[in-house]
Structure formats: structure tokens, C-alpha cells
Length: 637
Ligand code: 0RA
Image 1 (cartoon, rainbow, N blue to C red):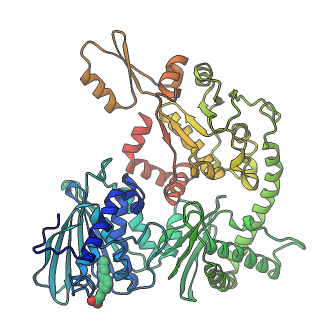
Image 2 (cartoon, rainbow, N blue to C red; image 1 turned 90 degrees about the horizontal axis):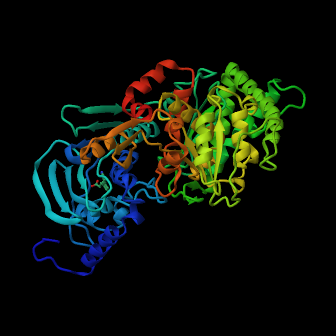
Image 3 (cartoon, rainbow, N blue to C red; image 1 turned 180 degrees about the horizontal axis):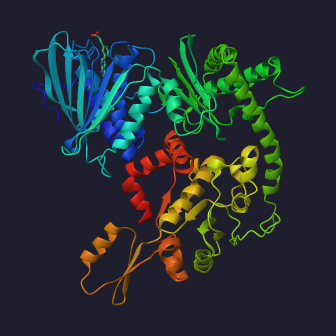
């Protein structure tokens, strides 16, 4: 409890307690969840405040440290949080800010504070959810410290002495009673976002270190003078850019700051990443619309006036986006969000302002770089030709009835249920495993689609070719959704699409190929949470008549340490080694199986990983596998 002497429970004080109690009672309302995501969110709340201080122009360096026992420290060299007496509470401002819910007003010193979404709910939320928190302030030549426990004041603001520095140091420990699932930060998660913040805020110095293990300290510094221009180069680094210079446009109109960078590669995917106030908008919105419309219009104008088009030629929007990597980043004083996850920008001024800055910038880029301009227009014309060819092929993928063949026999063993909320489809590698799965399944609601051998690598194939591939066609036909313009999630025939491959290197490879295909052509299925990975066991442990299955080496050790008697251990190399009953019991029975849900929390990173794993650049693939040796080992055991 509040151990302040003579603590008076006046109205503001009661309000404070009620505010933070509400946060503790329903943490999910404030930080999304108390799982790993919510845990990391704490860090972003504190980092956001420091970034705001930087956006206001008073701070150029932000340091994030994970200390032993998962204590986090965020240091900035800004003005320092105010320590003066707060007029409303009569307490030091810093205390009020950290103990009052929605004290965000105090931080409204710049107009770029994010108002939508989960961000910016403030330091007091982190404080309420921290077992302890200390805030050290260097300001006006003096150094202060204030301490909290579970959001309550523990030690009053104290003057420690003199200092030459300026800034704020926030140190906190997430409350283990609230973050029950795990208090372990994942360094990679923090590192990628810090690097992204560095790309999105040019010139700002970031560093992140993992000091949890003093023998294995990891430290990374990030600062990009080129901002989003360097972001695009980075995203294209494992691909082949088809023109040298990244096009870069920036400007400010109507109080909205816009930064755009774009470059085409020789691939087929379109990757446009829109951001508002440093936060990604996976559902896009007005800024992305402004970007796309303007791209189509300006490329068409140029193609015509530079006489690159044949008489009546003109480009459709999607033709202009093949192989495009673009960042559209805006800073908006009062953004409005909509859409399913409140992540779609709705502010119409953003459409206008992005369009205007983009239009002028792109026109100039094409004029100044006629060679790049020609390459870009020709790429779009190629895309158009392929699109028209693919349209024909795609029409053939429309599934009319389960038995409707595409000139070849699909090996789908369908389920009887037509209830898409219940039906599942297992995509199984190889005919023999497919056979076991067919016999082992519950054919009422489980369909089996066996695939023969390797799946086509769509990363290296254009859509019109990919749609000639039998395995790919069978999948699209079975799912029922169609692809591209015809895609309709409402027609999905199976709530769960489950990838089931062997637990070896080949199986991992096939799984990656399948995920690449789904990610590139049927991404909404992943976004809506329809795609899963089956987890077949690695070992069968038998003692007398009792049988147990182990799904990892760790689990095997645990089982072995708990058994008395002489166990016989069978190691499963492939699904085919299990008989149908075993396959059902261990991997397919909804009552017993574990499925991994495939999600793209981080679509940007996923894109990079797929390019790396599936593209041409063997060097970075090797590097990735080396850096992620543990992950790959897990996949391949
Ligand atoms: C409001 C006013 C002033 C500084 C800040 C907020 C501030 C907040 C945070 C949060 C993390 N780091 C921060 N750094 C600064 C300055 C008012 C003055 O000049 O006294």
C-alpha cells in the first residue's frame, strides 16, 4: 500500500488508486494481453515516451537494456520528466504522471502522440503492472530518483545530487503475478522493433542490449540518416533490385509529415508497408490508398508521354505493384482508425496529402531517372501480360464441385461434413503418409490432401506458371476461396488448414514451401488464423503396456526421468512409420493433438525470411540458418 506519511485520501488520491486498480484488474484492456505480447508492450510504452521526446526535438539517443532477471531499462537524453509540483495534485509532476491513469496529457508536449490503438496509454499503466519501477531524472543540473512498487509510491522523489547530464532513465520489472505465462523478453522481438523505429525516425540513435547473461552480452546500435530510404534498401537486400536508386519523397502539408521510399525488385510480390506515427497499419488505409492511386496515375502518364506504351496500352493498379517494396510513413497529429483491428487509417486528409507529395516526387524521380523509369514501366507491362494469362488459369481453379477435375485427378479425400466451421483439411506430404492419414482420420470432418514430393517454390515463379502446378491447383481448388481478385474468405470450405509433414529436414523444407505459397497467394488465410502446423511426436516410449509420446527431446528426457522400469524408445523419422491409429491418437485427434497456429505478427519480417529461405541468395540463407541454428535444429530434429 501507499506508505506515504500522512497520506491523505483526498479525491485525487482516490482517483489515482481507482485508476491503477482498474489496470491491474483488467490488464488486457490496456495492453492487449498478459501473454508475451503484452509483456513486450510494456517496453514499447516506455520507449514511445522517449521517442515522443525525440520527435519534439529534445532527444537524440534512446538506449534499451534487458538486465538480469528480465528487468528492463530505457534511457533517453531528453529534457527529463518534469519534477515541479503538479498544480492539481500538489505532488511532483513525475509522481502524478506515473500514478494517474491517462496522465498522458502531461506528455502532450508534441502533437504527434498516437491517440488510437494500444500505444500511448502511458507510463502509469506500465507502473501499475510492474513489481517495481524506478525513474531517475537528470534535469537542470540536478539528479533525482523516485520509486514505485505495484504502482504505489515507494520512495518519494529525492534529490540525489548534481549532474551534467539531461534525460530520463526508467527501470522496471514486470509483475510476475500478472505476467504469469512468461516474464522472459525475446531479444529478437525487441531488436527488430528498435531497428524499425530507427528506420522510421531518421537520425535518431538507438541501442539495444541483452545483459541477462553476463557471459553472453549482445549489443546493437541503430541509426539511419537515410530513414525509410535505408529501410527499403534493407528490405530489398536479399532480392535483386531492378533499378539502382531508391525513390524517396518527403514533405509536410496540413500538419502531416509524409515520408515515402520505394524500389522495385525482380520478384513478383507487392510489399507496401504503411505506418502512422511509427505504428504499422496492416490493414492499410487512406495513406496507402493515396500512394497506390498516385502510383498508377503517374506511371500511366509517364508511359504515355514517354511513348513507351503501344497505342491503347494502359496499366491497372496491380500491374504497377509487382516486385514493389515501399514504405509509406506519415506523422499525423490526430489520426482516426477503423477496420477490424482499428489499425486501418481512416483520416481522409492523409489520402490527399500523401497523393500530393507522392505525385510531385514520383514525377520528378521519373524525369530525373529516365532509365529507371523505363525499366519500371516495362516491368509493369510484363506484369500486365502475366496477369491476363493468369486470369485464364485462375478461372480454371474455381472449384465447382469436389469431383470437378482440372484435367487431372486431384487426390483430395474429402470429408462428409459441409459445415466449414467444423471441417478441417490436412495437407500431407507423400502418398504413404497420406494413406495412413486417410485411414486414421475421422472422415466426418477431416479431409486429406496428399501432395506428391516437393511443392513448387513460388518465390521463384510467376503466378501464371504457378497456376499450372498440380499441387498448387489442388490446394486452391480444395480450399474453395479462389485467389487474387476472386479470393473470398466466405467460400473457405475448411476452418482449419493443417500442414502435416515429416519431422526431418525434407519435411521442414516442404513445410516452408507450403507456407511460402500460402503467404504469397493466400495471405488472408494466415491473417484470419486458418492455417496450422501439425505436431507429430518424435518418440514413442513404451514401458510394459503403457505408451507415451514425446514431442521434443526435452519431453523425452522428462518422460524418461519419470519412468521406472525399462523403457523401449522408438524414434519416428516420418509420418509413414506410424500406423493409422497412432497417427490419429498423436497428431489428428482434436482431443489430444497440439496444433501450432501460424501467424504473421510481423509481416515485414516474415517476408524477409521467406525471401531469404526461398530466394536466390545462398549467402544470406546460410547466414540465417547459422544465426537461427537453434530454431532450425528444432524444426529438423
Ligand atoms: C513533458 C514536458 C517535458 C518533458 C517531458 C514531458 C518528458 C517526458 C518523458 C518521458 C520519457 N522521457 C521523457 N522526457 C521528457 C519538459 C518540460 C520542461 O522543459 O521542464
